Amino acid sequence: MKPKDEVLFHTITKKLRDDEKIKRMNEYMQHGRVSTFEHVERVARTAFRIDKFFHFKSKEKELLRGAYLHDYFLYDWHHHDGPLHGPYHPKAALKNALKDFKDLTEREKNIIESHMWPLNITRIPRCREAVIVCVADKIVSIKETLFMRR
Image (cartoon, rainbow, N blue to C red; front, side, top):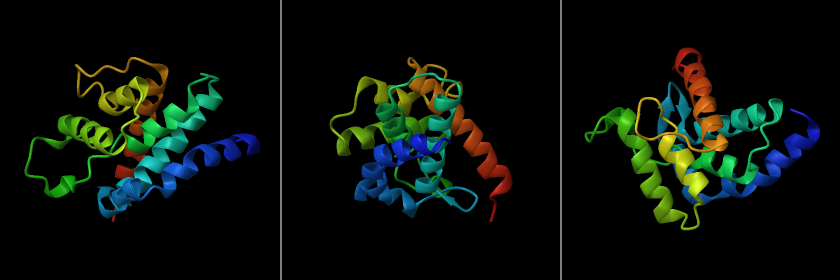
């Protein structure tokens, strides 16, 4: 990433990285030895890089906020007794995000609820930011699952 983009990324994400509510994702494992917090940070960075590389000109603050909140489900999915995690967790993440971050934009809501598309066939990415996070999440999840095991 270009130095000016790196500065912009850190400027936008500082408040998110430092938020105590978001830091709770450190308590839950995502893939292999990666916490949910580490996962969303990787997704945010990957989404930002995709946006810059392809000159998509996304709404950067919404892109990154949506990326940080896309897995804000706040439970250990490895020991979850509720509905099947894959299709269910975007709904749980959105519910938690709406409770803790009252000012979510429609774009941020779409990022959170549609990031598991096409698994959730009815939750369609409706903005470029949601598509970017959806793709970034797939890239990061594959890497974490295959190469960052315990």
